[in-house]
Length: 167
Image (cartoon, rainbow, N blue to C red; front, side, top):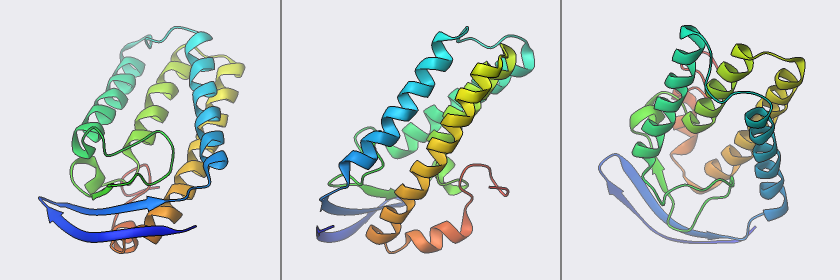
């Protein structure tokens, strides 16, 4: 994989480096395709609003985490593929201070609430596929992040992947 780097700049808790990458696109698209299929199957196999206060709260917390993560990352600084975009900036503010993949955690929380509140073995199996896909996707993404942001290794040591202080 080749890349071209330009100077690094700091802006309010964000480190910016412009990179262009020849990515392993088929693998990236495969992760996204499985993710999209799993999300679609969960959405179309039952209601998309959780039933009961506990599951509704879990779904709302997942949604709030996702919005917070997008706000911290800023539109235009992320993509659905695990490839590092040209002009990508390293972000360690907002939920990224505690977990490295809050958007994935958001999807897992929201869909878990849906699966548990309208349970079926099929929906649980699809959620398990989503969990495995996102775990593999974030592992793949982290290898790329370590290679392109020198501070990512120390960031990884002080934060959790998905659940603060646990995982």
